[in-house]
Structure formats: C-alpha cells, structure tokens
Length: 139
Image (cartoon, rainbow, N blue to C red):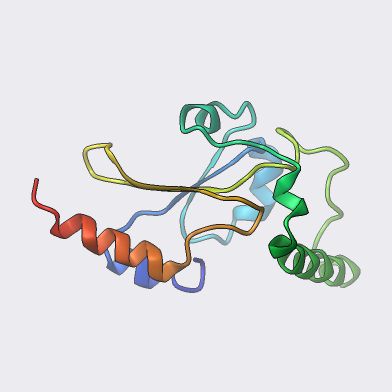
C-alpha cells in the first residue's frame, strides 16, 4: 500500500488506517506513512465495524512467512540501531485481525473484507478494482 500510494490516490481513494494502539505508541512508527492513521486503543472503531481479535491471526500457516519476515527485518533494524525493541505489552493486544472497508463519499460501506489472519488484507489490485466498480454503479 505504501509503495503504491500514488496510484491509490490517483484512483480517487483516500486511505485511512486504524490501529488498536495508542497515539504515543503509534507516533514513532507512522511518521513516514503517506496516509492518515487513527489510534484506536479502546477498539471503539473495531467494535463499530465488527473487527475481531483472535489467536488465529497468528496461527494460520499463511501468516507465518509474513510474521517471520517482519520479525527478521525488525531484528536487523534493531541491531542497526534504527528501531527500538517492541513494547512488552501493546494497547489492545497483539491479536487483531485485519479488515478492509471501501467507504463511499456519503459514508456508505461499499465493500468489506474481514481478514482470516494477520496478513490477510486486500491487495492493491483488488482495492483499485472495487473502487472502479463503485464509481460505475448507478446511484
């Protein structure tokens, strides 16, 4: 999403990401992101949109490679002094499942997807296709 942000923006999509962490915890991780980030440590938005937390977020074999990759890259950055060690605890826990929503200008949810594991989000191609379809559907 970050690498293709210009393409997403050119399609008329404004990306907003919600994390179940507090603002102080997020601040150091989101400074370079090209989209809006909302801290939701109480998971109010998660509850409103029906987003869950589950151990299965990490237990799915399809999540193992992305988790291993993230841990390895994080360890390398930690050893290089470019990253701090992760907090022992995290606001809202570490077991949040991802969810994607395409919301129209009027606030209507046009498409939704609830992830089955930690790395189960829409690929950019799917997001662009859904947005293009939404623009062509007559009101």
